[in-house]
Length: 99
Image (cartoon, rainbow, N blue to C red; front, side):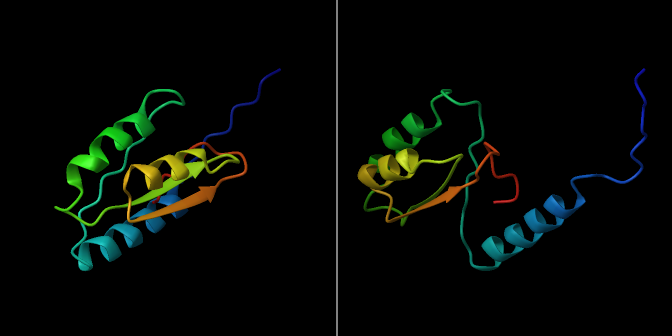
């Protein structure tokens, strides 16, 4: 038998609050940011690798990469020209909503 539990509160409230705080900090610093989220293998890192060389010398670019366990995408962003490339290993979640 399946039991249904109605959730009255948004279970992502904490994430949403953190996302709002992060956005406010980024905006206050005058930073333009792009958040790329897609399924594994969709081409996110390939897009970044193709885009970073086009921005070199025009903008300062940094990358924050989320991965379950490796630094492969972060290493690729650094090699493509990201001035800073930060790896966050999530240990299970495949995306970082609030970043």
